[in-house]
Each structure stands twice: as structure tokens, then as C-alpha cells.
Image (spheres, rainbow, N blue to C red):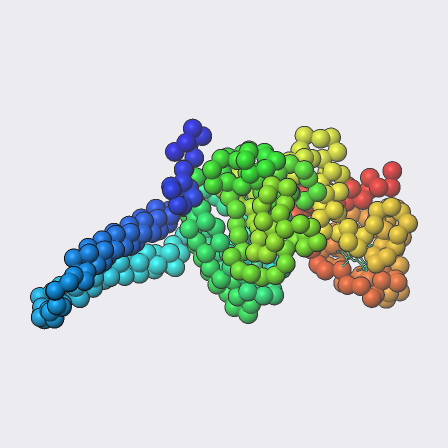
Length: 367
Ligand SMILES: [Cu+2]
């Protein structure tokens, strides 16, 4: 434990942040030291015999006899060691494979090159951001929408392939909350934590446990940029990075009830909803919807939209009020605006708070 009461790493392994980690590390170091011991003994014997049986003038080589005791010894000694190792490894594997009955479940979707996390009640978190409660077993049910991915959290000592066309599962129980620290680079964070992804539209990054995709699943976000980001971190191939935040049970319950909280950079502002809505627009909608009041392609401009009369391809019409906006986001295909039947808007799942924020932002565009 360091001065912040956070777990510390050992020589070769990062800090232990889950209930499974100590057992995995013990096993790792046991195998490691057994290998070191055998290497030393074998090399020492080899060098000694090379010296002892070197060629000397006048000495002729004599074949040695057969020793049954020696042969039984060097067969069974390693066998016993291997049985012990296998037993430890197998029981550990089973414990890691079967989630406890009282686990909470989180759906994970891997897609090039993002992780999406869906919690109880269909609550979808920000992309590449996973929140879990401390001291609670969590079971991930994972699938891929495109290629082979691999979900890897070194601090938890868990890794599992995420395969197209099937579900794979994985579980862990975090033993410690991650501290609330804002950062600009990895150097600002305690050992084992990284300075996470830039949150949607916001500048405030925070220290989190890294989630990796341990599979070469293609080019990363920002393929055109240099292979290294400002922090010197290689972003070139397998870095489909996610942020993992361990929070209290109370914070998690609030998240399930209300959805993701407003971004840190909007909190405390008078126009918190407008600010949040703008960030959602920047993260999810800007590719299609402009807000300059002019550009109408590939999707309707948001400036002047709120309160306006909308004409649909089926000939009906409606006023763009709160309910209409809400439905247009959750079920975009229910009413198609005239002139826009070529581009399909994907359905989004947002919390009520997020929908309120989008609507507040749209209204503010009209002022
Ligand atoms: Cu991947």
C-alpha cells in the first residue's frame, strides 16, 4: 500500500485490484522461481561436467553403467512438481471461469475500435467507459459486432477473447475504488492507473485503470496521426483503450437510476444542460447534424429546428416539441422528415437526463 492507500505493484506485475489477482500472482511467481532454480541448477551441472570430463592426454573415455534409482528419481521428481502445478492452475482456472451467483451483469460490445458497455435496465454508458461497484462480483457478457477482440484488464488479471457470433463471459470483483484524480498525462496518476481517454467533448481526463484490446483488431482511432500520442503512448494497433472506474455501491446505484452523470467540465455551470447537450452532439451527432443554421445535409440542421413544423414522407406533419425530439432520437424511423429518406439515422439509447440535455442544447441554438 502506498501513501494514498492504493495497492502497489511488484517487480514484474502491476498493482492487484481484484480478488483473483493475488492467487494469479502467487502462481506466476512460483512458476517463475521454479524455472529460475532449474535453469541455475542445470547450467551449473553442465559447466561442472564440461570441466570434470574435459579431454586430457592419456585418459580414455569409459562408458558409465545404468542407474535405475537415478532414472526413477529424475522421472518422478518433476512429475510430482507438475501435478502440483497442474492442480493449482486448474483449480484457479475454474474459480476464474465460474462467476459467483450474486454477480451483477454488464453487457460488453466490442466494435472497431470501441467498447460499449450496457448496464442493468439498458443503461448505456459513454463509449469506452466502464464503471463497476467495489466489492461486488461483476460478470461481463461480451460479444463482437465485427472482428475478433480481446478484453484485458491487467489490474484484475483477467483477459478473454471477444468473438463474433458468440458470447464469451468473464468475471471479477474489484477490491478498491479508483481515486478521483484529474490528469493530463500518465505521470499524474498513481502506479497502475493511466490518464484515461478524453471524455466526450470535454478536456478533463481522469486517472483510471486501463482496459486493453489484446488483439490486433486493426488500425486505431486516429490512424492518420503519428504512432505515438502526446503522452508517448503507442496508439498504433492494439490500443482499443477503455477506461475502468471502480466506484462505491451508492454511486453505482445512482448511475443505474439516472444514467451517466454530466461531464466534469459541465458540472457546476448554470448552463449545465446546454453544455452537456453540446458535448453529446460533438460525440455522437456532429457527423450528420450541423448546428450553423445552414447546412442541411446529410441530416436536418438543428438551429431553428425546435418549435418548427416538420413535414414527413408519409404526408403527415408535427411540431418539433420535446416529445417529438425525444422520439426522433429513440426511434428515428418512426417519422422520416421529407427529403431525408436516403440516410438512416441509427437509434440511440440515452437516459432521460441526457435527452433533456440534448433538447436544452437544441433550444439554446434558437436564441
Ligand atoms: Cu479490438
